[in-house]
Each structure stands twice: as C-alpha cells, then as structure tokens.
Image 1 (cartoon, helix red, strand yellow):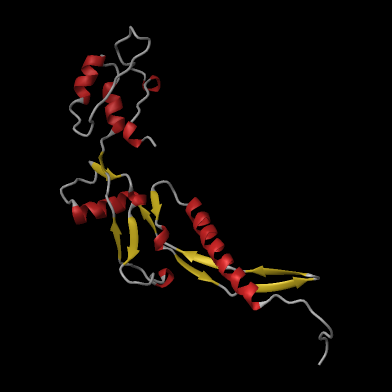
Image 2: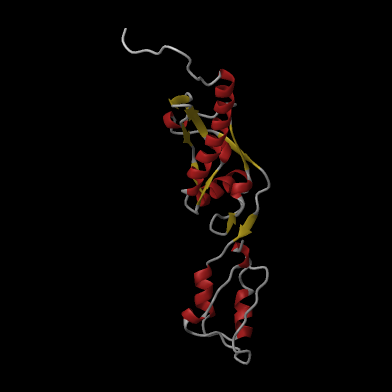
Length: 200
C-alpha cells in the first residue's frame, strides 16, 4: 500500500450531505426548467409537468479546510407546436371549429399530465399519451394582411362597412390623422393595424 493519511481529517457529515443533496436537486430542477424554457420558440409551448429529470449522485471534493458538493442533472421534455396542438384539441372537443378560423390563446395555462402515473421515458418512445385539462380560451382569427390591404384608400365609413363583414371582429376603430382627413392612406407603410386580441 502506498499513499494514505495518518491523523485527524475534516469530513462532511452524512446529514449535511443528505440535506445539501435535497437542496441541490430542487435548485437543479428549477434551473433546468428555466434553461430549457428559455430556448423554446414563441410558436411552441412547454409544460413543466411533461418534463422528465435524471440526477446523478452528489460529488464531494475537498480542498484544504473546504469541501465542495456538486450534483449533475439532465432533463427531457416535449414541446408542442401551438397551431398543431390547437387543431388536435378542436378535433377532440370542438370539431365544428375550423382551425383557420379560431385558435386557443391560453394553451400554456392548461394542466398537463401523462396518462400513466409515471412520466414516460421520453428518449426511448416515439409517442406518448397525455391529457390536458382547463378552460380553453378560443379566439376567432382572420387574415389580418388581407384586411389591411383591402382597407387601403377607403374612407372611414366604407372601411367600417368592410370590417363589419368579418364575423371574427367584435368591434373596431378607424383613426386617421390629421383629424380632418377621413381617408385611409394608400401606402401600406403609413397604416398601422393593431389587433387588441393579441396584445399582452
């Protein structure tokens, strides 16, 4: 035998290791979720309860009178394309809704859960079964670019008549500047279209 140690050595108690292990696991879980969520495109949704975590054993390293406890973890999850998910929900609960005429704008607020009590091992499965629960907020949609194009050059009165033909629009306002001008410009760069239903 070579090497070794003779004398008194400072150690970290099992109680401290267990407490730190629990704390690190919780912090890692939150950190991994935030890191994963920050990279999700705007047209996708990620459900926290869809994630599957894997954590390694706590690692202890010592340096002089100090000890460092480290832990590694990985996370796997599913992200859903909002349009595709909305269409799937419509097909199940509201087949009369046409996907190109309506959308669900609060998908992230719905409660996600796997069909089984334990989250599926995502890395080895090509399909999963899950449920979504909650009150879905269905919003009617329309072709905003087409409407804006059709409004160019119209008087305010004619514009309001045109807008009234869109059943998805509950109410609207046409504002022209300066106040004595009552015609919408023909230059699209001088027209601002604001859909209040999409505002935060």
